[in-house]
Image (cartoon, rainbow, N blue to C red):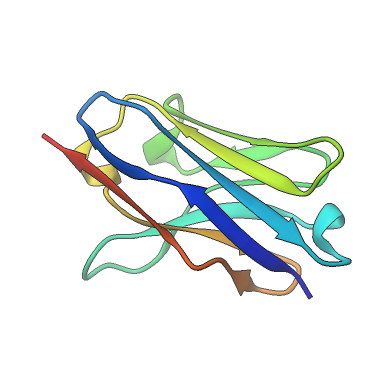
Length: 113
């Protein structure tokens, strides 16, 4: 089992920055590929970025060069640094565990123009 607790998010204007964090707990957490998904109203949840236990990262094309996902070496905590934010980045951001398919509670990110 993996439990996920997110923090961060908020509201910012176009071009601003925000950061998110997700603490993963459970016996599988430190071996797990963890990621960030987002969902805007009326759309499907989409992958934003994910990172393996070996800290190999991958990104959606829409956020490449603007977002950075990182991971603590010793603790199963991941971060998402979001820069040059755009209104289309608005949505609820969810932390995800690939190993067990678990989701965090979600945190709102709002980017105003």
